[in-house]
Length: 434
Ligand code: S3P
Image (cartoon, rainbow, N blue to C red; front, side):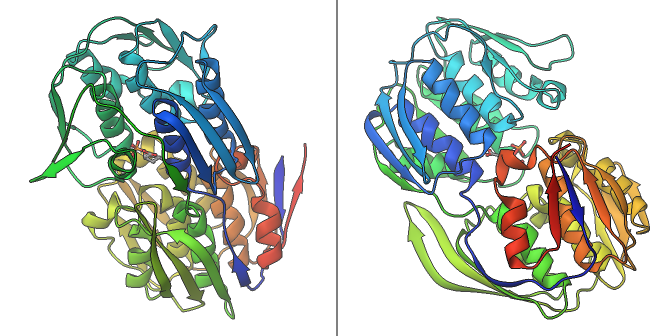
């Protein structure tokens, strides 16, 4: 599928973007190993979360739905998973692979995890290293990539792990393996990352401690089924926060968005750039803070992105780079080397697209410098990365000519129905199946 975008447009109206991807994955994983039936609403019916659903079905868990975002997970308890008959295909989803690897390390059976071309290029040593320290037997390719083969029945022991990189996936992998380990498992992180695993474990009645930056749990407890209302994904909302901020005349309300403090870097960074964003109707839903977000057009200016915001906005940088391209002056991002190992090398992929549109930029090893200016049109390559596709769709609002975005199939991993929703809000987008 490719997107074609006519230049210009105004963003207005009200929308609820699809459910949070991180929370959707975890609702299935924890629901599956809980005792009783967990009911989930607002579930993201995107390919990544569906890959997680398929993996647990393959391990004997009965899951009803999703239907209109409703899912019922009939949990089998901590030790009730069964050996899958064939390798578990995680598609494009790094979260599925890395978190499920932690659960599989603690099982009595052998298993194998695989994925698509993009996922099979991503580093897995970062989860294999701590799992091996816990006593797991797990192998990847020679370069530490998928497929991963896990040999069960190893008897894990709790460890303390100092995360070498700020990664919620690695943190969650270790904590999930810790459920199966003897004794206490603890982690420290170099910078705070999304804490949905910790929050949700507590929601399932599992004690998770946090003291002086050390997150810990004891193995061998039990999870009790619960109800989960998944908020709209701030990472999907981000495209429209940027869209409305850069298109003159825009006025948009995004409802029921998750505003977990570990995820709101995009709001903070856009605010520093001069965006007009207000949060209303604050509430808490199943342990996660939620609000409606009102955003209106405002002229943006370039900034030096504060280091303490980088990991709180890690998935939103492709969209933020478009904001920077439309801002006056220079935006500088450093300390974001993790962007190089996402669904694509997001620094390289975004720089290439910005070059196509004629936006001056300089690539750094761990970031980018972008000089805002006039955007032209052109043909964009997404490198199988949903967020590259959606970011350049938004750029069309300020482009002077048509933008064609090739290879947009992966948009469905996180944001099914993106083009229809975007069209309804004012983007001049059409999707063509190639
Ligand atoms: C995620 C963690 C982040 C993020 C990804 C989802 C999660 O990855 O980029 O989209 O749900 O835990 P890293 O842990 O690699 O930073």
